[in-house]
Length: 105
Image (cartoon, rainbow, N blue to C red; front, side, top):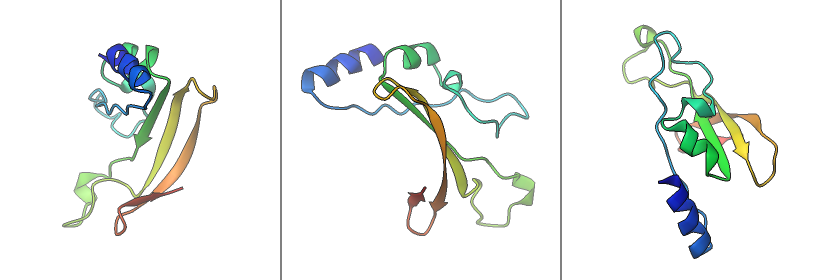
């Protein structure tokens, strides 16, 4: 559980990163900006961790894709949904550089 991981992190005096799936969006809402409530088991993932960060890249229309083209847009959004450490939340835009496999803010 998330609470158990939180206790383990405190005991080991380290950070633990948990990666979670999003709930499957309703039809027509595939590119909607996610929120913390979009996470599976969102109540446990909101209550226990110190920070929650969401990364979102919109999907392109599959009917307009060229062969071998990436299904995701190169531009995306990082959403700080919860920050117990700093208190402030917000949004930052990024660009994914496919050749270098890196995110540019």
